Image (tube, rainbow, N blue to C red; front, side, top):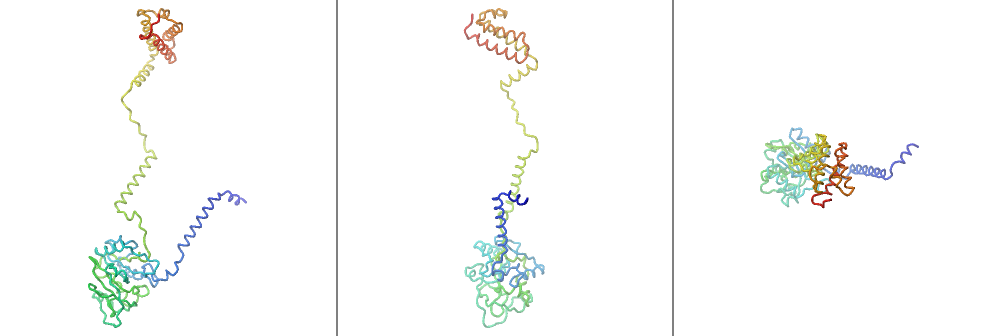
Length: 393
C-alpha cells in the first residue's frame, strides 16, 4: 500500500515522457543491431571480414611479414605521404554497404597518385575506365586458346609459378601497360605510370579472398603486388568503399594551427568568465579626483570649525555683522548698543526676532541647534534690512 501511494504521487506527464523516451531508446538500439537482410552473405572484400569472402588474411599476412599496414577509413582528400601503397578492392555494385566515391573523391585520389602515390587496384569497373578515371584499363574476355604464361622479373623472383584465376575476364592490352602476370589467356595483372606515381591493376577480386589466398603461389603473388622491391611507406587497405567511414568533424578538417588557436581563445574566454565570476583580489577603488568645488571647501571649513569648537564665535560673528547691517540701514552710527538698535526696530515681530538672535549668540549654549537658529534669524533680518531695500525708521 505504501508503494502504491508513492506511485500515485508521481507526475503523470513527466512519467509518460520518460517511459516514451526509454521505449524509443530501446527500439533504436534493437534496430541498429538488426541484421541487414542478405548483405552479410555477400563477399565484402574487406580487411575486417574474416569470412571466406573477406580480405583479412591478406591484411594479417602483411602484418606477419612486418610490413607497416593499416586501414584507411576516411575520404581520399586525407591521403598523404605517410601511405605508400593504397589497396583498393572494387566492391560489388549491388552491395548496399558500399560508399560510392564522389567527383571530389576521385579528383583527390588521382591527385594523390599523381604526386607519387601507389595504387593497387583489384577488380574492374568498365564504366570508370570509359570515363578515363585514373586511366584504368578496360576488361575483355579471356582468350580461348591458352598461350605460354608471361611473368615480370619481380613476380618470378617472388617465387610465383602458375595461378588458376576463376574470372573469365582479362585486361585489354594497350600502349603503356606493363604486364606483370599473364596466365596464357590474357593479362591478369598490369602496371602503368600515372604522373609521379603508379597504378597496379589486378582484375580478379576473388584471387586474394580468405578462402583462396592459401592456394599455391597466391600469397606470394599478393605480397609481390602489395610490397614490390623498393616500395616505401605503409600499405593501407581502403575500407571506405566497403562501408567503413570515420565521421569527419570540423576540428579534424580545419588546419591544426587554427584548431590550436581556437582552443587557446576558448580557454582564455573561460578564464575571463571565471575571473569575472570569482573575486581573486580586493575590489578596484575608483580614482579620487583632486579638483575641489566650493561646496567641498565649505564642508571642509565647517568640519574644521566644528572640531575647533568655533560655534560660539560663528554665532557672535553672525550677530555682529547683522547688527552692523541693521544700524546702517536705519542710519545709526557704528558702535551703537544692541539694546538701542532693538528699540528702533518695528514692528514688534522683527524686534523680538532681533533680541532672540542677540540672546542666542551671547547666552545660548553653543550647540548645533542654537547655531542653526541663530544663523536663520540673522539671515531673516538681513533680508529685511538689506542696503538695497527700504529702510525702516
